[in-house]
Image (cartoon, rainbow, N blue to C red; front, side):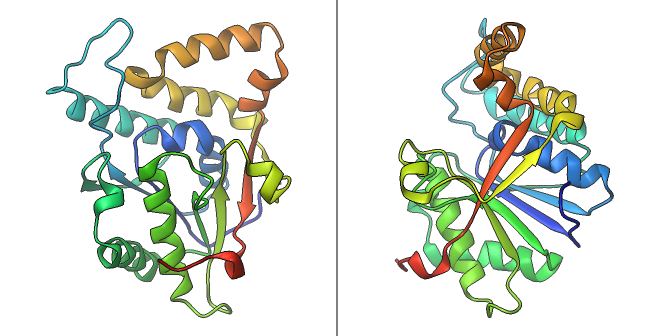
Length: 228
């Protein structure tokens, strides 16, 4: 059972970040009536894939990904989708204060009881890491007694070795079709992965089935964070 929240704020840098890792959790919160906001920081306009077979170009990809994100949001039931408009693959070069304030402003506006994003140092991509650090800096501004919970997605190769097993595991079996539809919406980027996932599901491969049955998070360890 997913714990009841007053408001959930999801922050990721790219369209499809939410679909891969947390779309089942998002759908579960929304289905139980929890208000949820998704802030997507970029349009993923520098994504490496252009469809399979290719149907996008470098010029058309930004708008295609915008539409795909809107379709994914619809599949999950999201009605409060924020497209922040930062540039893909540049978040690590954005001013730290600007990034922190962006997150702080969302927290002040929405007063979430839970924030979902990436875990710093365990999120692999530079945009992921920059987003995670900004979320942590913003949350650190809030006194611990008033600070929202932070459920962080971590998937670096050394994650379980250093962080242990996930602290929070959601069973998303009831919303697996919504998760698959969210992933399908991002078809310019996900076509090959969806083929492989479908093959794995048909073969009852445990790793493939895990994608559509569970989503895992870590509670952030505040004392371990080193400020930049």
